[in-house]
Image 1 (cartoon, rainbow, N blue to C red):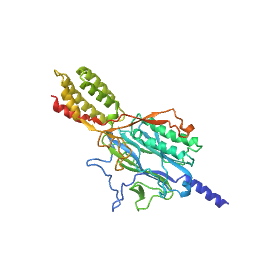
Image 2: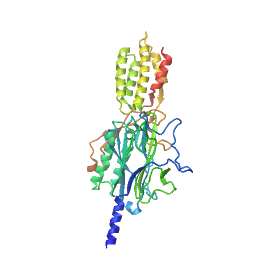
Image 3: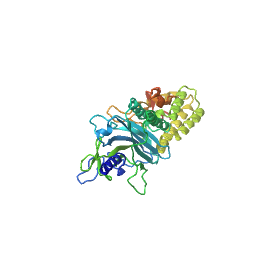
Length: 421
């Protein structure tokens, strides 16, 4: 009897507790013949370190819960990722996806954009994963899938200070659904948080914020950095065996970029474009133009979604544009034709923000080749998801007029200088 009880207790503990919950920084590909890790794939002249003027994306490349089929049967399993950036309030993103037949320990969340276009600005980031396991209920899967797709919409996953509260609403939607179906919301597993910080000029350490992969691991083994390597959507030990043995792990990718291209969505840009339109309508004096231009600069300087370096560059560009346009307005008669020609020559096509591009690569506000515009705006409704079991979600999207073209400030700067002396 004691033996049976001990085995039952051991099985219960193994399902909810782990010997080690650690962060592992794996090799990006299989180790070299000498056992060393290949370096990350970067553009020429770049380093892996994410500096204060860089942006970066945080994505989930793969997950694994190595449990037998019986553990998954008639169960709903949801991941949540809690992210805190600098002194900002933490946000939690729900991630639910059915486990595909024959997928083993994996659920289909490869390339899931947790948060994109994050301005570094010398801030730290904390990342933590929880796994919630509940009984299967009719309708519960659909609601959790809807909450996940809501959080994944590019209007929310692209970092903006204004969107962060909406991201938490997506998590509240999932949490309320579990409560409505009388299911536990306490995690089956919560990993130790990974706290990454800007690299110090005096020293480096393993938790420096940099381009690359990290694994949040919970299991019976005791892996160290570079004991793992990334093999597509898999994580392997350096002896090429899969990381299993009853473990749960989440593979994150951090990818840095030099700038973000969603400036057409910003209030300061839209006010600037309206100011240019009013100028071309010939109802703007040079003094009035300078006054309204300064208001645009003030909005730009206080935009929390861009790095300080990007804002400095925009301010310098806008200052040159202002000088050229004021020169044209002070001519007798004002040289509206040159201003209009420069603006027309500076218009570029825009792309809609999207979670997945044509080739499967995520398109974000930082890595698109063209200016990014967002076609959907999140709004709060009076829906009560818990009471209505998903019939009326508390967050919906309304259409924002599409922008087919945008004025590229850098191009306008050059075009005006070429036309106005």
